[in-house]
Length: 634
Image (cartoon, rainbow, N blue to C red):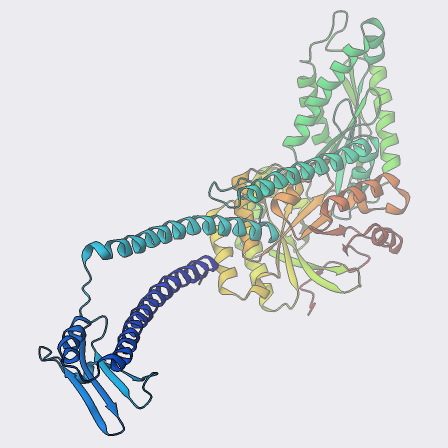
């Protein structure tokens, strides 16, 4: 029974009991008063008889007036006795009732101790009649009490209903479920406490947003060019090194763009005109990078921009340059400058094992040659790159991916994730496909083509099947990477929720779904609600590639992920990169008390020591364990 019902029941019992006690007490008091009044009257009669015995005990007048006097005082029977027996007896001849129901009083006469008198009278209530006009006030009192009780009960119900709503909102806040409790219910009570909680929630939300903006500002100052909003040289170098030192990266190209007219434009017109041109130039390059997952753009100098293209050949890179030049030539220039002669592009290819500094030097040399050629042109450093699969057309990739699915050539390798105590607590499943030569291809090679061919959901469905099957034989958590669009499918949400409901909560909490930060940072409320539905059923959510781009960390408050996994570009060679340590510290501050931060790409003990000092909760990388096929981790 609810507290409100208990309290109302208690009040009703108290009121009814009080009314009953008042009624019973009044009746008993009235009864006692009636009997006391009768006793007082009887005593007066006895005193009169005692005094009359001295005056006229044997006169005829005594016997004449006494019966009438006793009748007038409603005496039914009287016996006057002494030691010799009854001296005088009175009987009311008109009384026909039973003498057993009469009340008798026995007195010893004070003036005549030898005499005693006994009187029988009727009950004082025998002839009492309860007239309606006498009972109307009692009835009116009971009605007033009942109406007041009903009004009080209704008021208490409303008050306690508001208190229960306020308590429910408090429980939601304590449980970390603040969605839907920002606005107070109008019936919450006490009103002042409700308004105070709402005001504090608004202030808390504002402070969280300010904190997210502040953390983003820290990383922007460290990694973002203020004028163009692109990655600065530090951030671009981190990403370039991460791509080139990844054994699965295969090949790619670095494109250096230079605005050859910027200095002259700033001198002849104004610096503001040059800034406008830089921003327009940066916007076009950024739009291309957003539409291509393997592209990274940054401003690496005053008039230089760099574009990193992963998984492309030099021929494909030149095709990209040709497309971009056509778009860049549409930028309106001030008078005296020509759109067909203000851009120079240098192209340098790379493959695994190359030095990032050497590749940038080659791109810079190519840019210098292109600038000397004049006009909007490019120059490519000629070199032979080893690439088995890069350059294949979309038709060949689609055929290969479809065969991998139909012929069961998709496998999931495993890599352990270690906590700070050097104990594995999770195993991540990493997709690999097998080509016609039985060679395993990593996700960094084939996944861009999975996205281009529109086959993301098929691979994600397969990942879910493998994860649920792996959990049956695993005593630790199992983590898989999924696309956010997959979790927006009702069939996927329904399947995972049903699975979580059918299994025990402990096993449901061992499934970890990793989502890309770039995708979750821009989710709407409705999309977040679907992901939160899985989290409420016990399935854990992790944010992958955190820090790859400078984004707001508000998603930590909205999705409440269990883990935030750092992008390898922040972790690699951390001991000598102060800016990366600042960015990691910012992310740690955003996730403090809300999510555990996992460092991905740990390759040395020195880097792990720095990460431990910063406060990272877990690590993943070749320094802990290598990737293996169906590694027995239990």
